[in-house]
Amino acid sequence: MGKQQRQRQIKEILQNSSVKNQHELMQLLLEAGTDVAQATLSRDCSELGIIRSRTTTGYRLIFPEDNPGQMIKGLVEMEIQSIEANETTIVVKTLPGRAHGVGSFIDHLKNPKILGTIAGDDTVLIIPASVSDIRSILKYIQSNLLKT
Image (tube, rainbow, N blue to C red; front, side):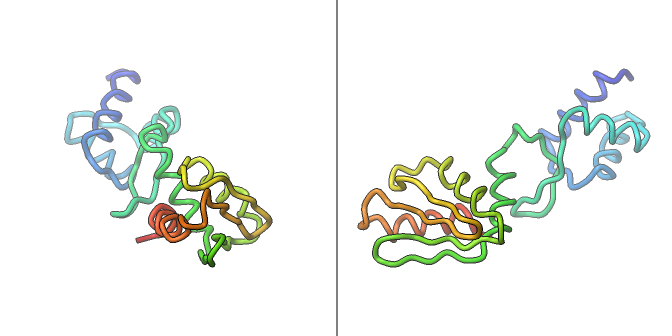
């Protein structure tokens, strides 16, 4: 089997199955009639841009373009230490040096109730469109940024 055909088969398997790692992918390829060396499979995965990403059900091999938001969300949720609010603002505490990335992710959510963010080193200030939206923004941020 040629490289293009093998890579097409890899894509089909990943689109139709939840595959946890390259060893499992190699087994599925073997079951489908394709015997491939680990080094070759590793090169194929690299060329195809396949990554191992954490999901709500564990780790899984994915194409970054399949769900880039989910992949980034997994990174962002590991960087957040706490989320707190008062009557006018929401403050997100992050690991040192990670506030800019978290603030950028929040901005890219494009929630109309959020005017924008200001990020320091380890703190993100979320500016609401209206102070009456604080509670709903807080719930939205918690459900979109924190592990459940």
